[in-house]
Image (tube, rainbow, N blue to C red):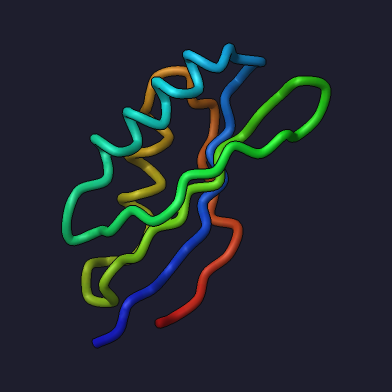
Length: 90
């Protein structure tokens, strides 16, 4: 079986300091566990000082999809939402 690679947009509920954004990134690295592989985490400027995170993950086909990953990311402190914005197979 192959892998599914996904881009997940993680949004805080408010404008956060760089330290709090870094804390979210650190928490993402803790939450993403094998067999899911964490790729890049990029900070993206959204608007008016609000920043979001683009998280790239690879998930084996047989692991039940991306829903558990999105759910785990959305439970991180200071995260308002997490949604899949792009999906592909590798």
